[in-house]
Image: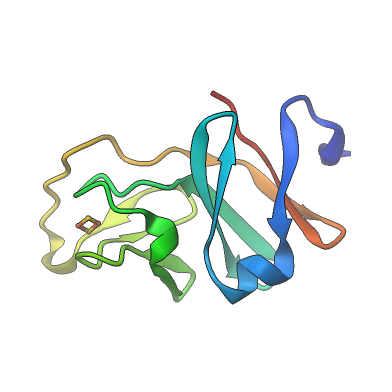
Length: 112
Ligand code: FES
């Protein structure tokens, strides 16, 4: 049962993640939780590598999270796409974390 994996924890409810991207801080690491599909969560670092915006202030479009500042989008794997294809990142791409649903909560393994 994944719920019992070392280092895993509940991040938020599925309904909250369906409503809007959720910012959760795990041991000092901020992550954003959203739903790619009704039954598929995604968890990546809550920081845009372009200009350090909080991705949790963005929105979800076609399963990808959209940065609120310049509309870069990120998939569940943390990979970015930039409008027009120009990628000039100021920082590292966000890490993605294994996530799953257990009961009515989104769980993930967020390691340091
Ligand atoms: S800060 Fe996120 S796209 Fe520019």
